[in-house]
Length: 255
Image (cartoon, rainbow, N blue to C red):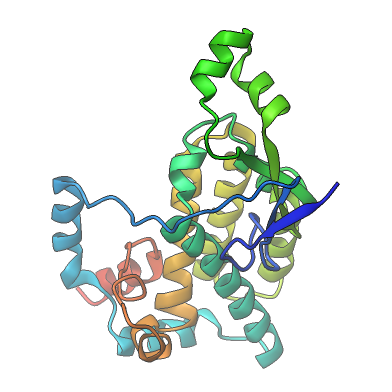
């Protein structure tokens, strides 16, 4: 059977820490268009406005990083930084361009296979244009799953790390960490990954994304300086979700 390859924009994670490629099995072509995240709600805008004053500066980040990474070797720091960066970029790309959270709102979505399987996994179905699923299902008395089985082509991706493998990697990284605050941040990623896998509740993936984002852009790197010069739109790498306790602790300690 012929195979038409479709590349998914991504990198690595529990959702895949090595690069995510997708393919459609069969002879038909399938296309995907990048989607723009929905405009923020009034509540989200209000929360963002409140958080402006609490965004860590580059000075804050450098000081917090020195504290968080104290006692680690250069090789250990590089390994941690690259793992978190790769995981963040994978989720970020899936969020911005592939409707990650919308797809995972369905607990039965094939996209959850990223948390359960490695190797070549199915993440969806592609159907050739012109087929009216509703009409065909009614005419042939088919369920949605029966329709996809009969007329669809499996969209697949190569997944190196499922949830269990990602958790194992994080546990190895934690073993090299000396700072208890950084230890706790990594443990929270493990907890959210485990909960996402067990419950298929999308909020856990959302929390996971925000934690990885903040660790990458506001601790292990500083997004505006380290990434900003290389992107046209710096709104994502300049956003801070406020998930890192180390800044709260420092603020409280300084009165």
